Length: 228
Ligand code: 4GX
Image 1 (cartoon, rainbow, N blue to C red):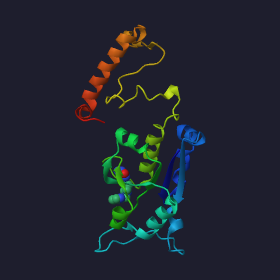
Image 2 (image 1 turned 30 degrees about the vertical axis):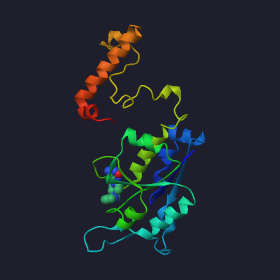
Image 3 (image 1 turned 45 degrees about the vertical axis):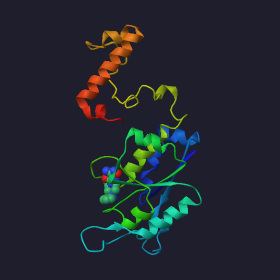
Image 4 (image 1 turned 45 degrees about the horizontal axis):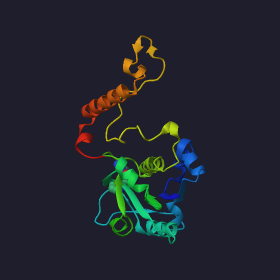
């Protein structure tokens, strides 16, 4: 079972996301073991539970201190082989392919960053992989951590039922999904394409592939150039 340890200064942010729907079921089915750790429990500053400090050389903002992070990772690691992830806009782009590679790990630790980031010694000596979930700046690393856990967990065999099957979805063939329709076949005069009602599986498959290709060319031509 994949184990994910998340180190954060906002442990309460995770419950609502992890304890619903597919992520909840995946944990109940023992497909993934997700544990949340409060970084402040590991600071040597017993009085103020401080985890940040001012940057040497001056400048605005604060940085996450090395001591609480080194001790939190050490405590969580406990003899197991783990991959330590830090999320930041300066990381390697997170993709479906990247998510697939992370399902191969036994243990992941995700450090949720805050302030202006981390002391460089954390990056050098503690972090194995720095991941970016997109080219924008968030208020912290909690949402990126949840996003990574979500994308990785649903790829674990047995997590999705056949209703939510992985086979035909976006990215699985390197293309975005084309248009889809459900009942009714005529919604207030707006009709479903005839081919989908034809029962001819061969022409349906061909139509879907053409639409997927056209859609990808139009909105994400970059996906056609490189493997995702
Ligand atoms: N993809 N954030 C990290 C703190 C920070 C600031 C500067 C390093 C340098 C993000 C993203 C993201 C907000 C997490 C800032 N760390 N993480 N945090 N985009 O925006 O992953």
